[in-house]
Length: 383
Image 1 (spheres, rainbow, N blue to C red):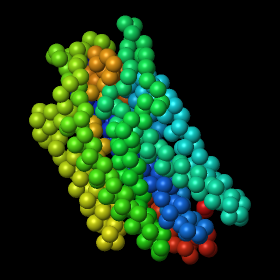
Image 2 (tube, helix red, strand yellow):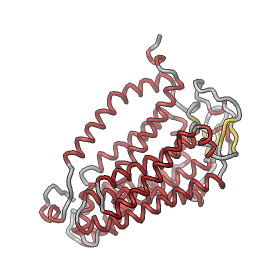
Image 3 (cartoon, rainbow, N blue to C red):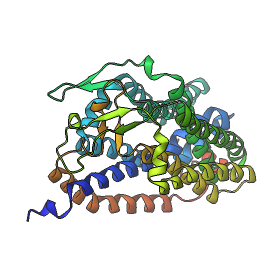
Image 4 (spheres, rainbow, N blue to C red):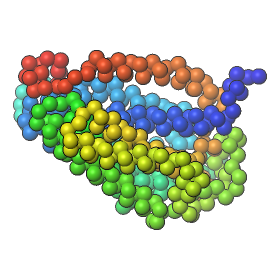
């Protein structure tokens, strides 16, 4: 027996679908509070000293948190090549906007302290705001478009053709999911600053974070209602082959009905939206009450629940096509080969625990609040 056949192709596909979700959620849980702090920066810090306090809560860890973003992109490229081809080409302008915003962030971190000039530093502080708010918004807009279906199709030789435009991505439902994503990460940034900052910065973060928690909860509920009554879902019209070749044109898919029928088929997935709702509500209450560690935990639970809701509701669809449903990408027909997925899984089993262990060690070493006194004396602060 060939070694990779120890695990069925179908099982490997599900494992890599789960791992993709883990990487995306890991990115939101770690780099998410970095983006949230950036989006909050002009509002929680009224002076240069206060903004330096906020920046130094994420300064030592933001580069490490980017690992999850890189791993997520790499996993899409290697495990789901069709998804990579369609999404990165179809969402080209949106991706360019995200990358441009993310490039601003490291430049701003490095340059804002190079000159002791108020206008210079304020300019880079707004660059940090853009680097936090824009990706959070665009990621949510992308999710909204995925739920509606993306205008692409495959030719007979599996060449993807995208027939949309950047401005068509900015439709009402997608803008609402973008708002939900942005407020979700601002909530997370507020919870982080409540834990890591001190004084007026933490106080303002609690107030603004609580508003964001309420906004993300409202947006999440409205998105669910919209899915129930205003958007068509996608479904197979013939039995799907779960361990066959990766060719989406072999499947028969139709657009119609509701995404929420997934909850009738798999009632256990209801746990995801419940976690999202309860987590956001508890984060709102925790920020209002001034709780710190538990509030950051409930913020993570909210993010876990909200992102998981999307994946579990759509399963097995990954990227539906709005113009040719038969071209829709699913877990069963858009993965790499059996051998490739197995080799990648072995590498993941070896290296993922090392990444998690190192990340945990870094956060343990850097545990503690950043105070104005630390910043004044440059004690353990660099920005």
